[in-house]
Image 1 (spheres, rainbow, N blue to C red):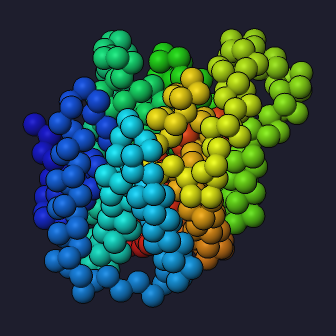
Image 2: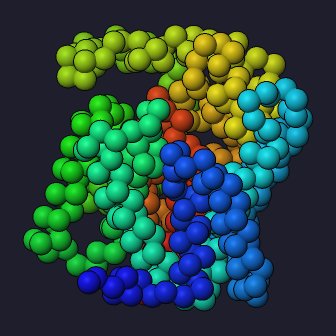
Length: 385
């Protein structure tokens, strides 16, 4: 019988890191109690941080990064408070406490873990949990087990995005590449592509391919993927995608890929219709936004599920100042680590660039990406110790 101790050491830190992983990256829509369980996880993580508060010093992280993070949280809270009563499906303040609390908890926990020399152990927990949920979620996809469009850990998008995140954590574990490790990694990529096709998740399929291309680009053009100009340039271009998509869709090659290869319409599954309504959807709340978690509520009023763009979702929920803080956070982290040779920078840079590209047509900027950016900020130079 395989013992879990072979892969991770059971300790108070490991338990808290596992709880942090569950509340940040895992959704179990089949189980209604799980969202409430996340508040318990959040309380445990903050208790751990408070208990080890003497380990919160982080002089290697720039003040700009800290200010951008905490001001993003502050603007998100302000936006959520201003819109109490204006959003009916959820309470934006409660949702903000949850999501921003998770974000801050990840940042502080990462600092404590780094200072206590537990980074490698924490990443082992993340990788172990990721692999377990990879296997379990894939079983539900393969056997077609779903409830209201959700597999074990969420929609088809959540399943394939989880694959990409698992591959990222796996990269941090591999020290020396040999034929066996390359083969295993290649097979996992193929399996991820298979699940994307089986679940009919075109975005996940494209995302997996983009992730592999980002890793290849990093290998061939050292540092280009982690350069702030690359990351911010792509992020801005994708945020503006609703305003220049017409030029892209007029290209015959793009039309062929969409219609013939992916068998989709040039409306991008209705996204172009949503993009035309963006001025109406955002309305007079351009500056302060509608509050965290309000995206679906507001978009449903216009017949859309969400705004289908990552940074515009941030704009809707946290306002213009909140979106600006996210841009500053991205730039400051990548500027500081632009010349780093750390494997964590390589892996996290590829992951973040992938989800920035996907954010042009999906709401992939948030708890899918910002915690990864914070991990890179805190312990990118410590994962191999």
